[in-house]
Length: 363
Image (tube, rainbow, N blue to C red):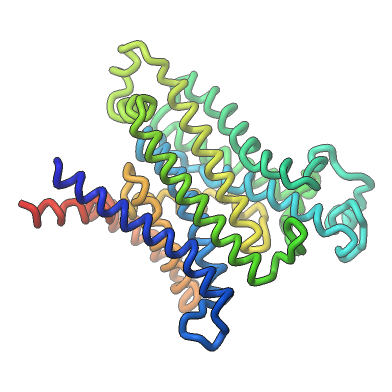
């Protein structure tokens, strides 16, 4: 056991060093070294890495509820999308008169649809602090209401997974409607600035990468601390033997609820960091397929490890970037094949394989 713990500590240290390097060194090289220098990283590289880090944060949040609590949420992408929409609404309010129609208050899509006034739920999004609050409160509130109803009814297993998938599909259909006031099929885009800075500038891109990396490192350390507290140990016990934990007098539904809400807030934060780096948020982010991809990230990396979710998210999305550039039509088939192979050959993911190799070498 000591050898395994030592291997875990080394892996943890390696992951943190790699994250710190991506978070600080790459933006530094992008801003300091000229384009012709071998030490320079392009704006495209900075943008792609920033996106990977937000996906890693999203995968981390799912690993918390699936790997440690046993809740396979097939609609986890909904919380990511809600956080993204909250940030997108703030960015839309910053456009002002620079939009196509020049309206100082209404976004272009509202002017096009003949809206006469700003909906009440858009009020306050001209303030950055309010938007940040909604980034975590909106997905957190949805997770609280859904979790309260589901966990009190003792819905578990495949039934809970199907219901979460139905939830994100319902949101997908709702956000597609122009009447909802979120841009319909086109979503929110054409962002100009964030906190008064040009959102397209290399400096802002570099800062967003740094913020994504720091959020991921902070969330990882916080989650690692949480799973080692008494609350975390009870949650892990619920995953393994829920009936026994309930027999011992613990309110199982409350433990499930708090970790489900916390993971939703982390997913919302990931969505908020994702949107300014890609420049758009639309209803496709609610697609059930996106939530299934998150599950594949965690399964491939190794669930119940936290850093496995980070590794899986980065590797799968790097493969997606490469394959969709070369042969986009085969990506979905490749993704399905990866999931089948991981399920059959690597049930504990890449991290589990590395642990077994370490044990064999130490034996």
